[in-house]
Image 1 (cartoon, rainbow, N blue to C red):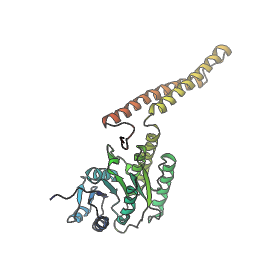
Image 2 (cartoon, rainbow, N blue to C red):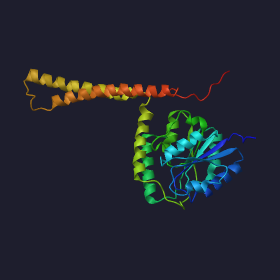
Image 3 (cartoon, rainbow, N blue to C red):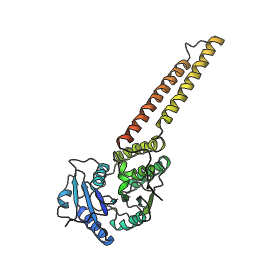
Image 4 (cartoon, rainbow, N blue to C red):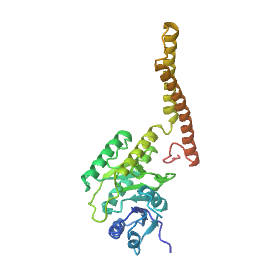
Length: 313
């Protein structure tokens, strides 16, 4: 007899976590057993160089996905989510800093009607520098993305499966999944969760990941504001530049013809010409970006909106 289809899926990326995986699996299994619904546990080994994979052997239930090399946490989340089968997906880190005992807090919000529930480590057990970078990133995210999430870096999150229909994760985008889904109209909330100090292994976070995250944040800002109307941004800016350049050249023409001014040593004719050229390039670029965005949606068989449900009466 086949096992029932899991209702819940735990997706956990692992990178050199040999000292944590056995206890992590035990805690996840214990939390799910208390919830009492069919579940699965999906570990994704992100090219670990220690005994993480060997330590996973014998753990049950477990589906272990192994990368050929280290591709990063976002790639591991993407692979685990796509391989999972549950109607509700719970993601978390593999370092035992997230607590599986908080699963019921996330699921309670899902049951109340939310599509995405993000954990908020309101009492973090990290180093000062890690907290500093995180708070700086949260401040910038609040200014650019405005997703209402206090702690996007917390990997402990719960999602309805339909949230990931047609969604591919790249770069450091796992931090901004709630913001991405908010753009599509999914209902997003957050809950305060526990956070524990790391006991085994070492953190994989560094300044390079912070810079990558900032770049992804700027992309999300653009996508949130202009993905559906990129021509309005680039085309509108281009037209404004063309008008400004034309005004400068007209001014120079009047100054030369009617007032006999010498233009040989003045920079304004070059400025006007440059503004017109830049404006034309921006307008053409806007057309290309707009075409690319439309092609993006057509290839995925979707539009720039999502339907929650249809009610017939």
